[in-house]
Image (cartoon, rainbow, N blue to C red):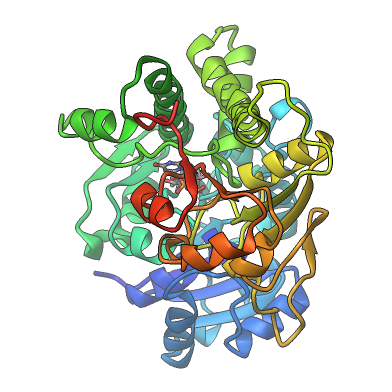
Length: 447
Ligand code: UGA
């Protein structure tokens, strides 16, 4: 394998993971970010993101001399050993959802503006951010250079297992209209031995959306199926186990929940809908996937209402509720598009009084005190304190610690013994033994 000189612009979770992992594969990597304070922290080995193994990998690769951090893309150009130019430039800058569900490409544009003209002939510019179909072509236009190729190389990393996903990928996708450039990018990953799909840029860009939207659809399907289970007296756990043995379906990504969230699935489903709209294609299946997810949040609120008041239309005014888990999923401190927070907002609108607990916020960052509230939800120091005087305890994130809580202690703290487990993670028998009533999603006998 040839070690390449790789420049990564953007040190968010995609950029930093990409930089550290490519360094661990033997490449010389310079990571650039416009946030000076962040670069300062990274140089001291401080990684802000909660991502297992990332801080260790950054420290290891930095001390091995393969990974360095600089402020600004311009500085990265001059930061390689012996002043040699970068061979590959990874764009890992944010592409947030802008107006009308269209991805906002200003960060990509500003990097191209800053360094596009300075790149050495033969450099390959790689788009790693999730971007609309046509962005590689647009990037090439912005570059205005025939001697610099643009490649789309979408990432499929999950928050909470990004390093593992990067170093053990299901596949590598590289798309470009320049075959030679695509092969050079694919070669960066050769040591991983993963199946590699070499394609055109538009297909690679679409593949990322196609994957995330398929996953979202799978989850909306499971959540709808859980609702149907409640109506016909079936059990979603048994149903998904049974269908999951079919290798065409698979066991993964079949857990019902409060709806899918995070920084990717909501953004990408809306963006693909936008892509379809602009192509004059009515993607009804995708729209239904999104609508089912929006409805799921209301469905959880309805469940709380019924469990607490005994009526579908009962009032939640001044009802105290404990919310366990506020992040969009376990293993991260990311609150972006968190279903837990969307549900909290609906409950508050209905007049409920909320107290939250999330293990991700027990300690403050960088020596600071932990937050006392998140999105208007006051935080308790532990699950028992959150449950004090509550008329129902809601489990909203699948943190493993919620399975093993001492539920008999929670039972003594609450005002009423109701646990609404929107992730189906706490054993209902354990709850019953503690004197608590379990309400899950799509479980037999809980209606
Ligand atoms: C997702 C994709 O899984 C990654 O492959 C992709 O690379 C990434 O987006 C991205 O585009 O960057 P991530 O946002 O980290 O990764 O989160 P997931 O693990 O996919 O979870 C998404 C949501 O689905 C969460 O709210 C989670 O709680 C929910 N979920 C997941 C369920 O409700 N049930 C499940 O069985 C699995």
